[in-house]
Image (cartoon, helix red, strand yellow):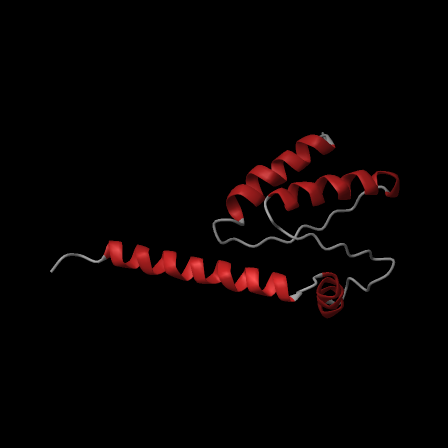
Length: 112
């Protein structure tokens, strides 16, 4: 029994993008789809990921040797552009995250 494209994308959004990954988990999903459906599925996943500020990399086994993890890594790295604006934004987000961790640690200290 299969599920519809819409149901699958909603599952990704709820189970992975909103919860698992946001909570510190990591996930790689490899999807094999009929070429006739690829554009609509890629658009749906890309849109759902973008809503949550995630990136989607597309690796096609016709173009990249997927049996070698380093080849997948290089293909993904080529697709992720880290311009100055993105780097500044990332640094800013990391600083906010570090501050929130410091705040949580301070809140957890027992009074002497």
